[in-house]
Length: 158
Image (cartoon, rainbow, N blue to C red; front, side, top):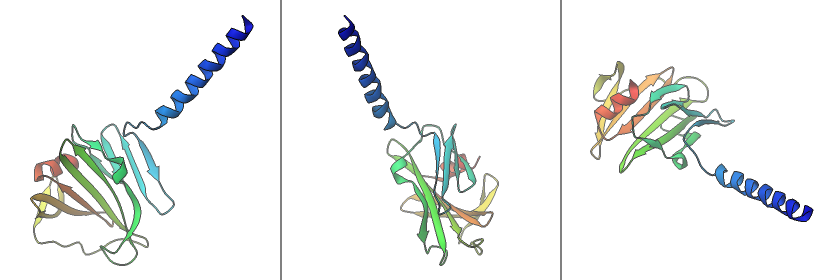
């Protein structure tokens, strides 16, 4: 009888261990991530904070965690610039959010062809491949939102 109890306890312990390891791979898009290069992202209760810029994730959209970039080097706004980004999807629709920032200060001189104010945020709206792209500046950073339309962009900014 003692041997049966020991075997049962051992099997239960193995089952719990396997369950814990299996559950580690699941994600509910809550949590944060940062790296030593200055990259910072967190998602909590439908709110995205990317490099200290806060946006509201539209209803029904989920993060594509494999698309996350944290403080990758880029020359988009000159030498010494980095970009952090993530993507959200809802069926066959996606939203891409990028934040460009400089290693040694602020990005200046944000310009564009179509100045506009969306949800109280001044920036520049353009269109590429049938998608709306909104660029604006906050605290020396440049935020770029690439979405299916202007209304989706506004829902992120509210």
